[in-house]
Image (cartoon, rainbow, N blue to C red; front, side, top):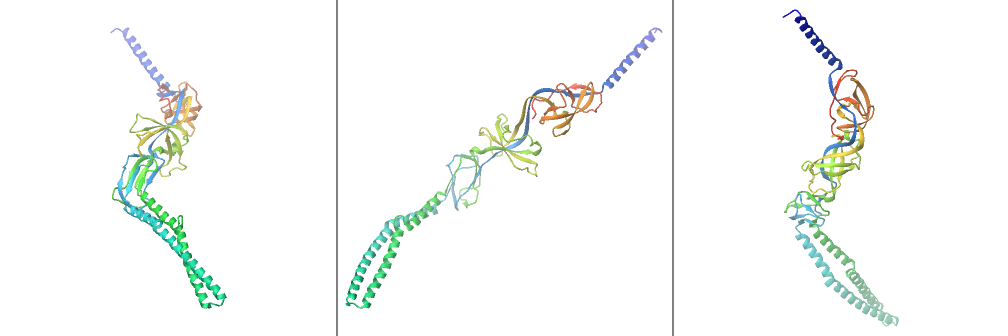
Amino acid sequence: MSAAKFPLRTVGLTLLGLLLLGGYVWQQWRGPEVAGYRLEQRPLVQRVVASGEVDSQSISQIGSEITGVIAQRLVREGDRVQAGDLLLSLNDDEQQAKLREASAALRQLTDSSRPQAQATLAELNDRLAQLSRERQRREQLFKRQLLSVEQLEQARQVELIARLARDRAKLAATAQAPGGSEEQVLRQRLAAAVANLAKTQIFAQTSGLVQSRDVEPGDLVQPGRVLLTLARADSQEIRLPLDEKSLAPVAVGQSATVIADAYPQQPLAARVSFMAPQVDAARGTLDVHLALLEPAAFLRQGMTVSVSIETGRRPQALVLPNDALRARQGERAEVLRVRDGVVEVVTVRLGLQGTGLSEVLDGLQAGDQVLSGEAVAGQRVRWREQAMPGSGAE
């Protein structure tokens, strides 16, 4: 190798080394590459998402008003019934016997006791009239001194006894007369027997779905025991035990979407209809009830559902993914903004907040570059843009 070529190769290698070193120094000066987002305006929907279950506002507990033995059970769990449908029947032999006894007593009054009382009263009226005439005749004879005092007093005593007997017969006839007290008592007894017989047939008072049964034919039942439970047809709702941390944006009247885990392709529209007045301290949740806007026959009591409540909406908002937020406290948070390749800490004020995106009201503007990764204020970084998540705050 010639002496002229050796210095040229050495110079070339030296220059290449200097270039590589310069590039390394340049990269180090620019800082590490950190991913981040470019702020932009887009539609924003804030949602609160939670799991709940199908429930009912109205659960009827059906029992018997009388003691008896179940003769028939005509429904079971899952059966849909209409108001007036027969659900259970009790053995009615005793009630039928009491009804026949009450009917017979009323017939005896109308067919026998009443006519007999009226006849007795008429007979005693005639006898009293006869004895009154006899007493008057003796008084006339006594005035003419043709009769002794003893004979007059005897006539008066006999008349008094007859009058008392007539009055008793009159009271009895009055009691047994149409509409009288005895007839009222017997008719009330008959009505009670009819009512008790009717109680052996247990009917549905409202339309709905049988939720549970706790009775079979042959069982002895008594008042106070629950035999069936019935969920009213128009009372189906969704009950959501909502974490109290997610409670602030939720309000009665907000719209929601309900999806049963068993039927993911059939979303249902609902609205928030009720919020419990207090938080369950043991679970840290508050019961939120949602009314379905249309009935859903495929839903079953206790079925698990996913609920998304729309708590706010903006047609256009400056949005930022939540993973770019730091030191978040209420509506305030910090972000790392990159300006001219240098990291700076910026305090922002938030609007709608969700689990995915949040609205930025103050502190940033469209086009600003913010970091999702870690960095230190004043550090030089190479910002690499990454795609924003979905368009709504869920």
